[in-house]
Image: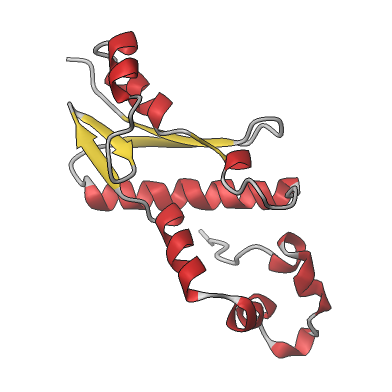
Length: 153
């Protein structure tokens, strides 16, 4: 069995890279070297490798319990996976409110990478639990979400 481990064509995802000559190696690396910032990298790292909080058997995205947790707990009761699903979803269109409108391939790439990195981080932080991490790629409402996989007793 062969596995394709090539990454995406970043020149398709980041049009600015098309102006770089082919003979410079990996244009995305050159672009990052010249335009990237450490403070931005740290902020993006928190998006791709997030922290989690545990409360009442729920694993929630972020380093604190959301203010709306009690409301959702009252409304959804003992359905912990439903509480997690509601509080752990993020619409990709809301991530960067002042950014230019992204194209579909860029959003799909971002959503797939977020799904994979969140799943890896959840496995690392909670090795004894299983999670369902999804990326909904509907063009009108791309979102990423996760919840614990619970077994009926």
